[in-house]
Image (tube, rainbow, N blue to C red):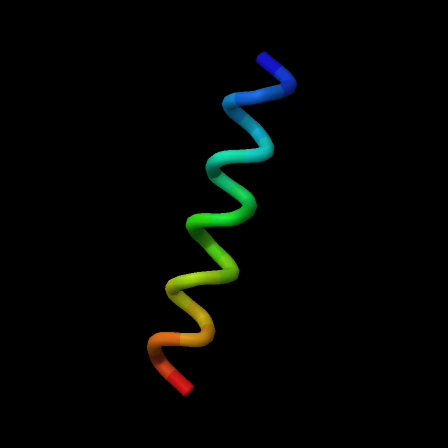
Length: 20
């Protein structure tokens, strides 16, 4: 479950960078 959270977090950061 830790890995899943890490993936979701990295995906969120990628989305933020994509927006900006």
